[in-house]
Length: 145
Image (cartoon, rainbow, N blue to C red; front, side, top):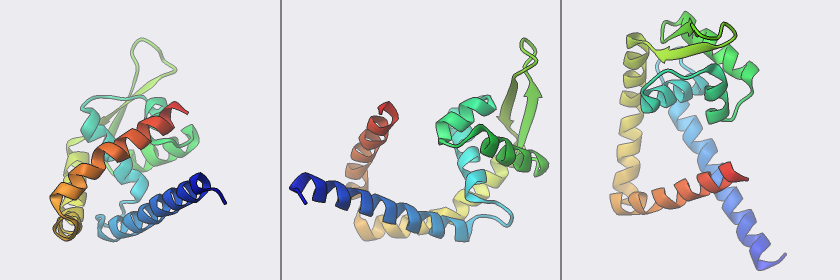
């Protein structure tokens, strides 16, 4: 195995391992009934600060439209989002975070925060801040490919 292949394999292994552990840790502290996919949508809507179409959400979260429709249906039943028709194009819908969704998101963050604070204390804020631009650049690079 070449040095580049070994580096790539190690990078991928570390990222996948972190993702699995982080997902498991977050899933354990989410409010009752909330799944990771629900949290991902709520997190995106909080950060986006506006309405998005189901297609935009699916693309942003790298899931199929069918998977997004399923997740949005569950979030709507829970009262965490509002889905309205597009007044200019009847084929399109718009999704917005509801006040209950913001409260559910805040509750989820409240559960996640102690874990993140402990992680930050262990690693140090400087290391985490230094890692963010690299992770962001990796994400953007993957978005382009």
